[in-house]
Image (cartoon, rainbow, N blue to C red; front, side):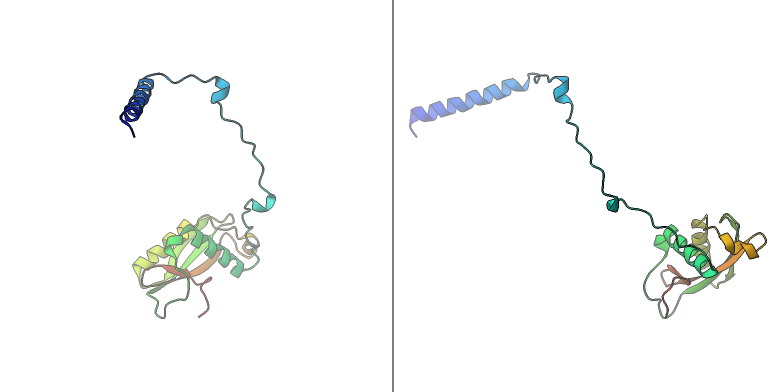
Length: 171
Protein backbone atom coordinates (compact mmCIF):
# COMPACT_ATOMS: atom_id res chain seq x y z
CA UNK A 1 0.00 0.00 0.00
CA UNK A 2 1.33 3.42 -0.95
CA UNK A 3 1.71 6.32 1.48
CA UNK A 4 -1.17 8.24 -0.14
CA UNK A 5 -3.53 5.25 0.01
CA UNK A 6 -2.61 4.61 3.63
CA UNK A 7 -3.24 8.25 4.57
CA UNK A 8 -6.59 8.27 2.72
CA UNK A 9 -7.71 5.01 4.38
CA UNK A 10 -6.68 6.32 7.83
CA UNK A 11 -8.48 9.60 7.22
CA UNK A 12 -11.60 7.78 6.09
CA UNK A 13 -11.56 5.60 9.21
CA UNK A 14 -11.14 8.65 11.44
CA UNK A 15 -14.06 10.41 9.72
CA UNK A 16 -16.32 7.34 10.13
CA UNK A 17 -15.48 7.07 13.82
CA UNK A 18 -16.11 10.76 14.31
CA UNK A 19 -19.50 10.58 12.61
CA UNK A 20 -20.47 7.53 14.70
CA UNK A 21 -19.46 9.28 17.90
CA UNK A 22 -21.32 12.42 16.90
CA UNK A 23 -24.51 10.44 16.29
CA UNK A 24 -24.37 8.88 19.75
CA UNK A 25 -25.60 12.04 21.44
CA UNK A 26 -28.55 12.50 19.11
CA UNK A 27 -32.05 11.35 19.93
CA UNK A 28 -33.20 8.47 17.70
CA UNK A 29 -35.89 9.23 15.17
CA UNK A 30 -39.43 8.82 16.53
CA UNK A 31 -41.71 6.16 15.14
CA UNK A 32 -45.39 6.57 14.58
CA UNK A 33 -47.75 4.76 16.97
CA UNK A 34 -48.71 2.19 14.35
CA UNK A 35 -45.05 1.30 13.83
CA UNK A 36 -44.45 0.71 17.57
CA UNK A 37 -47.34 -1.73 18.05
CA UNK A 38 -46.30 -5.37 17.60
CA UNK A 39 -48.09 -7.24 14.89
CA UNK A 40 -50.89 -9.44 16.19
CA UNK A 41 -50.01 -13.11 16.09
CA UNK A 42 -52.99 -15.25 15.21
CA UNK A 43 -53.67 -17.96 17.79
CA UNK A 44 -54.80 -21.36 16.67
CA UNK A 45 -56.58 -23.62 19.15
CA UNK A 46 -54.88 -26.86 20.11
CA UNK A 47 -56.38 -30.08 18.79
CA UNK A 48 -58.58 -31.81 21.36
CA UNK A 49 -56.17 -34.72 21.77
CA UNK A 50 -53.40 -32.36 22.95
CA UNK A 51 -55.40 -30.79 25.77
CA UNK A 52 -54.59 -32.72 28.96
CA UNK A 53 -57.68 -34.07 30.65
CA UNK A 54 -57.29 -35.14 34.28
CA UNK A 55 -58.17 -38.79 34.74
CA UNK A 56 -61.43 -39.55 36.48
CA UNK A 57 -61.01 -41.29 39.81
CA UNK A 58 -61.99 -44.93 39.66
CA UNK A 59 -65.43 -45.69 41.10
CA UNK A 60 -65.50 -46.70 44.76
CA UNK A 61 -67.63 -49.80 45.30
CA UNK A 62 -65.68 -51.76 47.91
CA UNK A 63 -63.42 -51.16 50.88
CA UNK A 64 -60.43 -52.13 48.71
CA UNK A 65 -61.43 -49.52 46.11
CA UNK A 66 -61.66 -46.90 48.84
CA UNK A 67 -58.28 -47.84 50.33
CA UNK A 68 -56.63 -47.64 46.89
CA UNK A 69 -58.16 -44.19 46.26
CA UNK A 70 -57.06 -42.96 49.69
CA UNK A 71 -53.54 -44.41 49.30
CA UNK A 72 -53.17 -42.68 45.93
CA UNK A 73 -54.30 -39.40 47.53
CA UNK A 74 -51.76 -39.82 50.37
CA UNK A 75 -48.94 -40.43 47.88
CA UNK A 76 -49.98 -37.41 45.81
CA UNK A 77 -50.01 -35.23 48.95
CA UNK A 78 -46.62 -36.47 50.23
CA UNK A 79 -44.47 -37.45 47.22
CA UNK A 80 -41.20 -36.84 49.09
CA UNK A 81 -42.24 -39.08 51.97
CA UNK A 82 -42.70 -42.24 49.91
CA UNK A 83 -40.38 -44.64 48.12
CA UNK A 84 -41.06 -46.97 45.21
CA UNK A 85 -39.81 -50.36 44.17
CA UNK A 86 -39.27 -53.51 46.17
CA UNK A 87 -39.60 -53.40 49.93
CA UNK A 88 -36.33 -53.91 51.82
CA UNK A 89 -35.83 -57.31 53.47
CA UNK A 90 -35.97 -55.64 56.88
CA UNK A 91 -38.37 -52.76 57.45
CA UNK A 92 -37.38 -50.08 59.96
CA UNK A 93 -40.93 -49.63 61.15
CA UNK A 94 -44.52 -50.66 60.52
CA UNK A 95 -47.26 -48.25 61.55
CA UNK A 96 -50.97 -49.06 61.46
CA UNK A 97 -53.34 -46.09 61.67
CA UNK A 98 -57.10 -46.07 62.05
CA UNK A 99 -59.22 -43.30 60.54
CA UNK A 100 -62.86 -42.44 61.13
CA UNK A 101 -64.18 -40.69 58.03
CA UNK A 102 -67.41 -38.70 57.72
CA UNK A 103 -69.87 -38.73 54.80
CA UNK A 104 -68.13 -35.87 52.97
CA UNK A 105 -64.64 -37.34 53.29
CA UNK A 106 -63.83 -35.27 56.36
CA UNK A 107 -61.45 -36.78 58.89
CA UNK A 108 -63.34 -37.24 62.17
CA UNK A 109 -60.66 -39.11 64.11
CA UNK A 110 -57.18 -40.45 63.44
CA UNK A 111 -55.05 -42.59 65.73
CA UNK A 112 -52.10 -44.95 65.69
CA UNK A 113 -53.18 -48.52 66.39
CA UNK A 114 -49.78 -50.22 66.14
CA UNK A 115 -46.25 -48.83 66.20
CA UNK A 116 -42.97 -49.11 68.06
CA UNK A 117 -41.39 -46.00 66.55
CA UNK A 118 -42.61 -42.51 67.45
CA UNK A 119 -40.88 -40.82 64.48
CA UNK A 120 -42.53 -43.21 62.00
CA UNK A 121 -45.89 -42.78 63.78
CA UNK A 122 -45.68 -39.00 63.47
CA UNK A 123 -44.77 -39.27 59.76
CA UNK A 124 -47.71 -41.63 59.09
CA UNK A 125 -50.16 -39.33 60.88
CA UNK A 126 -48.80 -36.28 59.02
CA UNK A 127 -49.19 -38.10 55.69
CA UNK A 128 -52.78 -39.01 56.50
CA UNK A 129 -53.57 -35.41 57.47
CA UNK A 130 -51.89 -34.04 54.34
CA UNK A 131 -54.30 -36.07 52.20
CA UNK A 132 -57.43 -34.37 53.58
CA UNK A 133 -60.15 -34.18 52.47
CA UNK A 134 -60.45 -37.86 51.74
CA UNK A 135 -62.55 -39.34 48.97
CA UNK A 136 -66.22 -39.54 49.92
CA UNK A 137 -67.10 -43.06 51.11
CA UNK A 138 -70.37 -42.97 49.17
CA UNK A 139 -72.36 -46.18 49.48
CA UNK A 140 -69.81 -47.63 51.91
CA UNK A 141 -71.48 -45.38 54.53
CA UNK A 142 -74.81 -47.20 54.19
CA UNK A 143 -73.88 -49.80 56.77
CA UNK A 144 -72.25 -47.27 59.13
CA UNK A 145 -73.98 -44.89 61.50
CA UNK A 146 -71.94 -41.66 61.53
CA UNK A 147 -68.46 -42.53 60.33
CA UNK A 148 -66.79 -44.94 58.01
CA UNK A 149 -63.89 -46.64 59.83
CA UNK A 150 -60.84 -47.99 58.07
CA UNK A 151 -57.18 -48.67 58.77
CA UNK A 152 -54.02 -48.35 56.70
CA UNK A 153 -50.51 -49.69 57.17
CA UNK A 154 -47.36 -47.68 56.49
CA UNK A 155 -44.15 -49.61 55.78
CA UNK A 156 -40.98 -47.59 56.51
CA UNK A 157 -37.47 -48.12 55.16
CA UNK A 158 -34.24 -47.06 56.94
CA UNK A 159 -34.55 -43.52 55.48
CA UNK A 160 -38.00 -43.13 57.09
CA UNK A 161 -39.69 -43.08 53.72
CA UNK A 162 -42.80 -45.21 53.38
CA UNK A 163 -44.91 -47.37 51.15
CA UNK A 164 -48.57 -47.84 51.83
CA UNK A 165 -49.48 -51.50 52.26
CA UNK A 166 -52.52 -51.21 50.01
CA UNK A 167 -50.31 -50.21 47.05
CA UNK A 168 -47.05 -51.94 48.02
CA UNK A 169 -45.76 -54.58 45.60
CA UNK A 170 -46.36 -58.21 46.49
CA UNK A 171 -43.33 -59.79 48.13
